[in-house]
Image 1 (tube, rainbow, N blue to C red):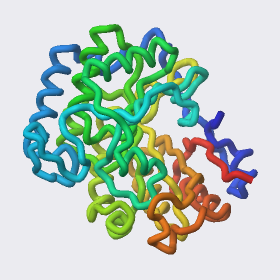
Image 2 (image 1 turned 180 degrees about the horizontal axis):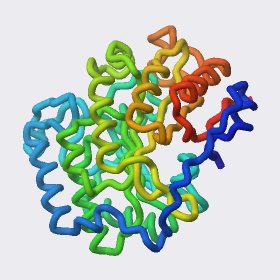
Image 3 (image 1 turned 90 degrees about the vertical axis):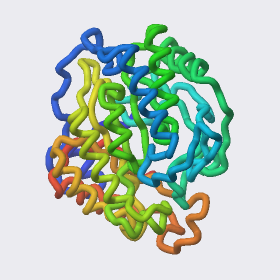
Image 4 (image 1 turned 180 degrees about the vertical axis):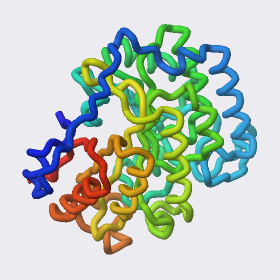
Amino acid sequence: MAGVVSSAAGRAVGLCPRAVGNWPLADMTREDFIPAYARIGSDELAERGAALRELMRSCRLCPRRCAVDRPAGEVGACRTGVAPIVSSHGPHFGEEAPLVGRRGSGTIFLTNCNLGCIFCQNYDISHLGQGREVTVDHLARMMVELQEGGCHNINWVTPTHQAPMLVDATRLALERGLHVPIVYNCGGYESVEALRLLDGVVDIYMPDAKYGDNEVGKRLSEVADYWDRCREALAEMHRQVGDLRVDDSGIAARGLLVRHLVLPEDMARTGVVMQYLVSLSRHTYVNVMAQYHPQHRAGEVSAIARPLAREEFRQAVREALDAGLHRLDERRLAS
């Protein structure tokens, strides 16, 4: 199981031997925890779901602002209507350590995406539309099933374009006993308007911070303003939930956890991203990820048409440490 980078791990990958431990945030027991959505209750969840659905009428759920009328049957860049579309659901043990614990993170992989990443690792789901339509009631039953199976949280994977349906399902799941944290696991290209309607619904935000450069976002994800919108979204997420907090058993309860996939040739502009994250808080929990391999259409851009080199990952971790971040989830390059 991956853990938080220690000074020993840092030396193992040739980093400066400075202390990089877990911030002592274990200030609650699991029994003390009440999820955000339970605090606002069913009536407020119904209002939030309705407000989010209203955003679909001239769709502005994400910064693309496609302005299509999804309830009338029109679809925009995400190719999604008003029904939930799910690829799979089940316990996942490949997520960050504070999410996985011993019993796994309860992932619901949602079909389609608001981004067009040419190197997408899950392109069969996000681009090719692998999945099936389900009812909101069925989606709620998935959440309860994952909790009953022992999962520590409900992890919405790629939720941006399906947020209204997810909030409606959460209301039904709450009425059936759901009580674990909800994780909003997104690509980082988010509308602040929509995020504000999720304030008090989501417990843990887990966005990507893909690139610290708009031009790279345009080239690799087919959106011209990725970094501008990502910074706004990260700031709003941090305002809502703050730094990542864990319970007395080390399981994430509330807060912000950011993922950053290191790309060859520094295409992700890692240093820029890390400087911004430390400006939010030096206690931001960050997963600097080393697992890049060219997938989907990555061969169209020569800089990312090869796997990541070990030294490129080492340099990325150095940049995170040099920026002043100290809560890094350990992900080493395979030997």
